[in-house]
Length: 154
Image (tube, rainbow, N blue to C red):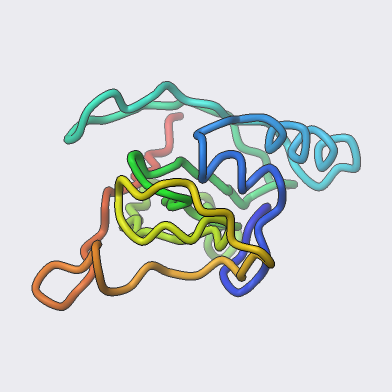
């Protein structure tokens, strides 16, 4: 896991959430790979426009059955969607498919409150938290901004 709600964002997560940068988050993953705590850096293409879809093929291993994926919400101050430490196995077996709704998160590093807010660095940074209410709520509830679907290829 490279991020967790209630915990502070790493510099890599800040750069990803604020600017969509893969570095230095990719260096964090590379360090975890070097210590055996991760298997691979996964990087997909940009969505381009919404609605849209990105496909990413990757190999999994029993030694590393969890996946962490993130992408920034743009425009936005430091908002992102993703999963952290999501298990792709259940009861020792690979899941054939898994769909996960992606709700928006705030990295706690920029105090902007709207999609097009100016950069306002949050000092000290706040913990990562789910975005609730304005401006992401629709009729009082926050809908998912997307869906992440895993399909096992044999």
